[in-house]
Amino acid sequence: MLVLTGGRASGQAVEIASVAQRLKTPYVVDHPSADIITAKAFEWVFRNNPTGSIYPQAFNKFISEVPGAMPKSAAVVYDNSVFGKTISNSAMTFLKSKNVPIVNDEAYPVNSLDFKPVMTKVKSNNPDYLLMVAVATTDAILLTKHAKEIGVAPRAFVGFGGGFGVEDFAKELGPQSQNVFSSAAWSGNPNDPAVKEFYKKFHDKYGIWPKEHEVEGYAIVYVIADAMRRAPLTGNVDADREAIRQALLKTDMTTVFGKLKFGNWAGPLGDPYTNQNIYSPDHSVLAQWLDGKLQNVWPKSNAEASYVFPDNTVKR
Image (cartoon, rainbow, N blue to C red; front, side):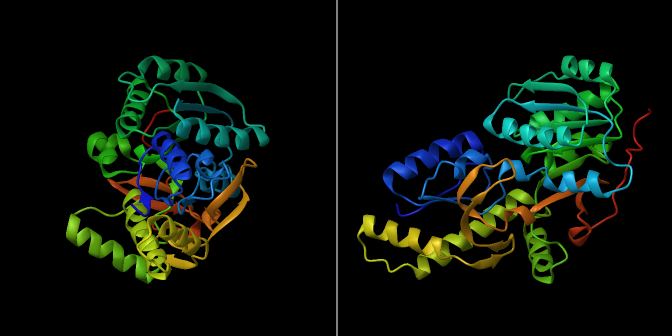
């Protein structure tokens, strides 16, 4: 084994990263986003996708740049995983810097079955925005479903995390998914002709439009292949692992996910990143479920559709 990738959830990736560092084997992260993965000074760990604290960046820009969009208050409900805590902390840190009251700060166990008690508490505080973080798709679905069934009526339902960006979210919720925002890693710039062509080919073959997870996974194979082509492999496992690591350090390329160059820099919350894609701050997008399709709406340069705000599916 010369190189590792995979590990969908951040908790898994944290453990994989530790093993990779100990075994001196390159680990190229494709999706897990907890900041700590590239904030432990591990020289054998590399990441293309944005960190969790970057996920809310497009949402932060939206509420700062769209007239009247700054929340008057916010309820934040998040899973108690490394992933959930990272993103919720980033989102709340920014909101507090804008003097937005956090009227609910609610953590829950991953794969919960009943969010009605939590949403009853949220409803009693009448938040202007409801922010939800879910690594699990079932949690994202049930959070939204139970919030709407209980009658929570914010100006915006905003999801963060993988659970809000997959096809099953709209399939399971139907009309209840309408207008729900998802602030997360982007899926490449949909207005780039090469990315558009990839989207079409992927859809023609698999019947779904590729989003964050699919594009990240597809791109990372090319990143690893590029490094292996440039590495002077000899058949000696230890030497070849080091050669691939050195090749990854020199990576400077563009995939369907976007530009990539690994570097050391400080994240939004001050985390000292090692081998984190230096272009990650540009790879956050605010998307919205519109008629069963997740479409980018902010920033304008990456938008596929006009946003709907405030939410017109609830009674306030």
